[in-house]
Image (cartoon, rainbow, N blue to C red; front, side):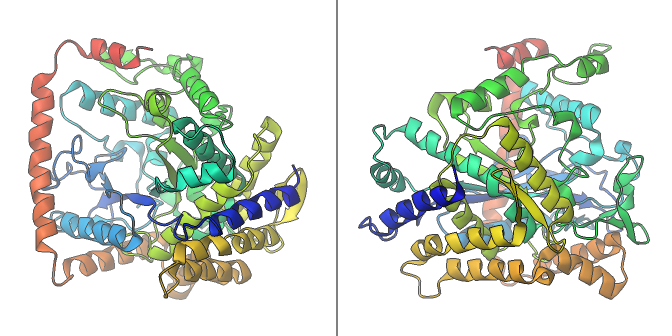
Length: 527
């Protein structure tokens, strides 16, 4: 379908929303953030200490957990209907964590601190329960398959669901027969396909990892250039984190997971977690009776599949992500493409989150035909091109089989978002969404305003290495959080209470375990 036809369908839907008689139809969506940070020593080396007990149990705490490594803290907010409440909660979480870190710091960039070898990266530990053990074995398997260094990268994930009242109105606009969870899931998959088509824009606007510490590249082929002592870079990169230097994994290059429908998505992921992969079998599943990985399949579990965006539903206890989706459909989307920003104390800001909210609405409302294999290859190439060369003058991307200037396409997408931002701004004279959009539009016109350009300019101005700049910013952020006044004592007390409850909950899970670990895994993976 031509882009003109897509634009016509989009304009029609947007106009219908504007005239729906519900002026605030897009307002009140639920948004949350998951923000990862490495715990490091005062000297910027990866912390070898356990996850602080005062932060609670990484297994059962809802808001403070760990990701791949014992030293990789993940802060998870509840969902909120306003961005300022979300960021306030994230700020409070940081303040609480910093009160229990002693001399340690939270590393302030996506690309890791100085790490000399995989052995320096401790696996996250979740106690002696079957579920806790499974989490650690899974992480050991990731390290065997891809190396631990890649798992030390951190990011910010934005979770979003449209307001419940939006769906009946949208079904009416589309003249859809079904109005239930099948309709909602199908529309979320429209969004997923269009995010694959247009998500490169997020890398251009918000990528802030054009440089890496050379220790990250140790023993790898990379073709990056020297920037400063101990620092390598790609001159026009936006997000090396989201490039083949970072998360984009060659091991998964042949893994194709369709987002043409919920059925195809579940089918492809289910196949990957049940299909043996000889190279992984060669690594061994067990060694002297101890698990090295959960299995020797293409994916051990669904979460091993790396993608820029995921369809999600909160799973019940013991339920796999694909089972949850199959049971009740898509509940929200998880946008996984944001770098941690050293220029924001909590790693993200309101402008960015408001833009993303409008951007996912654009992806939902635009026409979204199925993606064939040939188109998917060019979409993957676009993401990689922008991650590695997004600020290159005259850069072109592939669209509908033709080469188009990236800047012209970016302008077109941003122009299309103006009407969405107007709906999101209704009733607010400060027009925060339109202002967030204008801030991003300026980056398209002036590349020096992008965070990746700003990072390189800062390094050039100070003469610092990437490591020195990140360590300096990490120290500044620590001072900022410890000096906040007045602290929200009620919120901090709530976090202390939650930490104690989570430790008790972990003990209860461990006490309730029955049977052998092998039996537990067998039950978990049963069809």
